[in-house]
Image 1 (cartoon, rainbow, N blue to C red):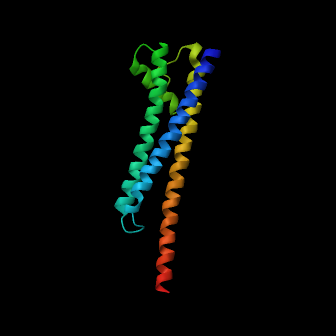
Image 2: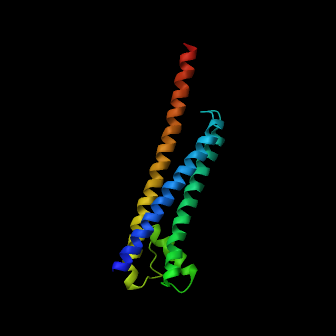
Image 3: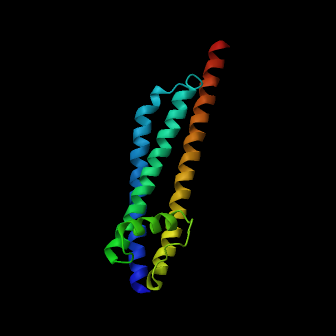
Length: 151
């Protein structure tokens, strides 16, 4: 149990750092591009902006899943890297198909990956909600400024 807990603590720490760094990079990228989007003037650009955010979040999560898959592979838990990646994806996303099972001595590591994935996916959801809320706030501010000019 202790090796599993120690490795889980290391992987959770690493994936949280990856996630935080990924969100910072994604936010800087978005801030650099946001001046091209005028409120209410380009629904296509706003949609493209949101698609880019989602693709960025998927890339961050895929990288985190790969970290776990590489750890499973390095520990020899699964016979192939594909099985490690498949298990890691189903554990991280908490889908848990169960057709690829982890050895009993590593079950805690698999369960903690599920908890870690659940939290990181929630963090990404909060990021998206905040971003879309900010876009809507900017639209309302833009409308207020437009109304003030008319008055």
